[in-house]
Length: 407
Image 1 (cartoon, rainbow, N blue to C red):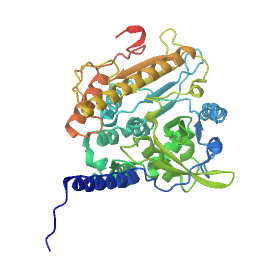
Image 2: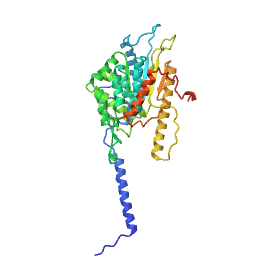
Image 3: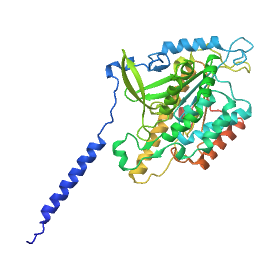
Image 4: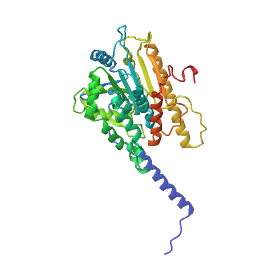
């Protein structure tokens, strides 16, 4: 029996059916959600970490608690750590470190060079977000940890941070990359000894805060790391490492981090990611509730220092007509504007509370690689640049570089 060839219209119909079926399969896979147990929307403000009820502040919820803790920190101080001026007033210094991925090598270098210059303050408060949280975890403990800070930001490569997933696996995962290597890197230095050092600094009147973004609630969550370290809870180290991982977990690129929480005795989970989604660097108002101490007769006053691991001023560039190029440029522009806005907010807060404002960022003449390309050569260049600037007695910006059209 002779088989008759199919008519062209039947061939086209068959192709269309196959294509439609393939599209349906992809749509199902892309729309597929992994199982979770999220907090009911109406109860999100009530969620707490079991055993760690007083260690975080979300959108003002625990602000009074954090204020009380900061007042307690003054009672814990050693006078040698925070010497009084001739007039009996005690000036305080706050350090806020922004994100920036691989560009964090600049901030790490600046801190090390600052130590070498002998002018680095003993910070009362240190805050960090994204890669700035990793830097801050060592900066908080002082110059004795500079060698480890240098090691992390000059010897790691992309393979020490993440593994890119295969194209097909994107269909059933929640991120383009796997952060297993980053978890190992965090675990390498975030051990019991490190946590104990944070607890000791906390007991001596200093405070360390890290911020993450609660994606469910769309709120910034500020974690009191010293309180966690001082809790003596058996899961303190585990929670600390999860916070550090969450703070650098860029949504879609890296998987989110889940925290088990309770509401009225029932267990749920919260989805957290990079706090840089909400702010570039952070100084909360409760951190500024100190007696007014302004610079006077050559004596220091209350000061805030911001280290931004990026350039702040516009960087004109001719953008190619390419989906990838346009997307990358748009996200870069959004990030730059985002950082500028929050820098101005911090500046406004310093003026209201009589703090001296100090800002340093990567010089605008610098050529930067992609933030997610952890290239040792480029990171060493940035580290050396930051260290050189600090050793030379860098004159901090006293207002944001783009303030009042100053660019």
